[in-house]
Image (cartoon, rainbow, N blue to C red; front, side, top):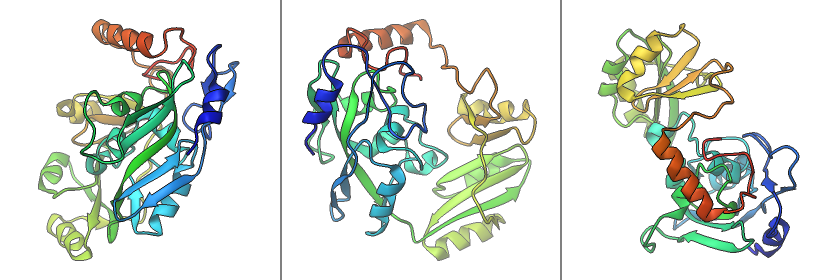
Length: 295
């Protein structure tokens, strides 16, 4: 995929912002806006890799991969670039891992208007600092991703949600074998199991899980806590107002002014590192001005 036109659009001077489908925050208001290229460049099913433009809708990419029995570990909706810029995995993170693990290579436009390659097309041929992991979750403040090569995964033969009413969610969590997601709302444990039908059915029967028709709806707010403190945090909130991802310390809470749109304040040492990294990648602060790597 030729990124020359995209690099020319980003340019070398003046504030500039980027947006995809606008589902994960969108462009910085009042700033000249650019859009990353879209489309699937190639798909190598035997190598389990796919190359696409950052502006490609995630759902469109998943549909193309499903035709060959594969998928990519990105949350649904929005564009590929938006999912990588925000870096949030959704409720499948326990099984799929973080979003950054899906990225093998990224080609991005720097603040100087240059096309830069980070990573490599295979797992084993990259040495040095992993810039892909730095770009994921940076909210477009270090560079505008134009093209990525992503690692794909096989689609499981069976994928089912189950529930169980219990006051001891950790007993269920510990007894599960490689669950994709384990959620706790203070009263009910929601479990996503994938694999061969007989294995899924056996595990559900052994633990007394009840099949659920749909995935649970999680509130829009998000907080991070120590995994060991998850149950205490849930107990301190009103049942129904929180859904916790067990094993990860991620709480989905009813949005309010304190947790929905305000980026968390980092510790002084973290803020210093962020400022130094930003100064190296974007010394004039022209990329997504006003945004930080936290949103």
